[in-house]
Image (cartoon, rainbow, N blue to C red; front, side):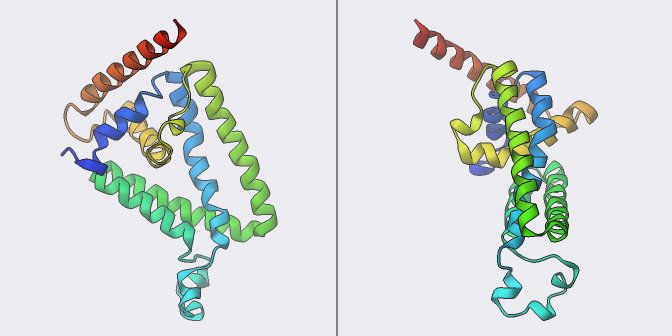
Length: 202
């Protein structure tokens, strides 16, 4: 079933797909997007937790296992909720991956400690973002989507690559005709962008 407004998956996917139509660039993003999300959660482990703010830390079940209802948890939860509201089946899987990233990043941050965690995150983020910008510059020949819509690009990136993998491997579609409709919109947007680019050059 097609979503509406902010949860219109077709609209979001078409926007992001217009910036990621080259197969190699899509592969690059498939490799690097989820690690960016994962490592971005690592430093958030060191933010105050809800249990701590409410003075419930000693009684908090999760805290005893090294997991805290901190900023990282709520960021992962927002992403998970957003994806589920756009598409229940693929969104549920994406939501599980988001929460798994929160658990994994929390355990990694706890193991590394604040100082080393920041160094690992910085190195990983530089590597992943460099790979993505090279993918755009060398293969897509177009600036990343985040330069035009920062929030939408960051929100959609993990879900976009997951949907691409599900479609390629399993032929998954959120609803019948989804990918054919999106492809038409992507082709139209790319054509409009190319025409605008050509006008600027002349």
